[in-house]
Length: 268
Ligand code: DGL
Image 1 (tube, protein in one colour):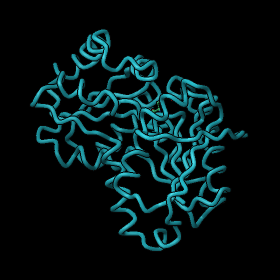
Image 2 (image 1 turned 180 degrees about the vertical axis):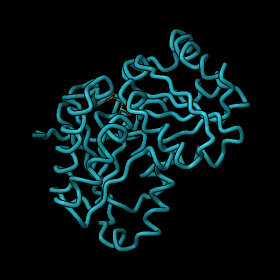
Image 3 (image 1 turned 135 degrees about the vertical axis):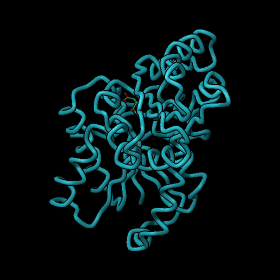
Image 4 (image 1 turned 90 degrees about the horizontal axis):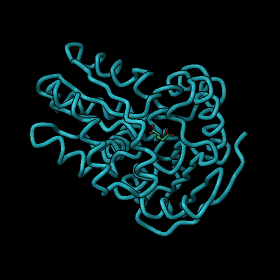
């Protein structure tokens, strides 16, 4: 099984693309809805929550986990991959969302002026900037935290005129610095893709991270047949959450674009 983890339900944007591109693989989604959002929390707590979640998914039989949450990928992934995984599940894999998106960004940026928007946790961790500089040392990375965007998307306000105003405010400093590529470094932002693209104009290439992560996963599986062969192929997908409400259910179905059943579990 492929596990997909997110701090909440935003990771369904990634799941939707994975199901579209790789429909044959069984997916086990886990959203930590009881403790979402992670975006403004401390690194220690984000690490602890993320570790509990991946441990749970491995115990359910996942061979490979995608940490779809940018905040977890930025604040916890490297330590999990380097210190925790080798001692607990040495033959399994955890992949994040930052590296694949950065690879795409440095490939398409002409000027090396790359913008990143995300939660405070993601921006403060500086993980996008670090990865971009590894692949393109001459790059200038302009990162901006947009803490209002997650609640806006969750309230279903994506298409409101007020949201366009807020987006214009957030994107102005990036446009002023003449970025030519913008990374949407948060699970929720693909839902605002059209508005962001419209505000950015034709000169800025906006990277839809959900799409790129799915594409890179396909490529990863083609290159790692030892993992690919172990993955169950069926459509018995399950969607686990740590808290379930009507609003969560409505958002989940809207973001995934299909009816789903949310199953409640306890993470500890
Ligand atoms: N999933 C988070 C991310 O991609 C956004 C929501 C949160 O703050 O937990 O950064």
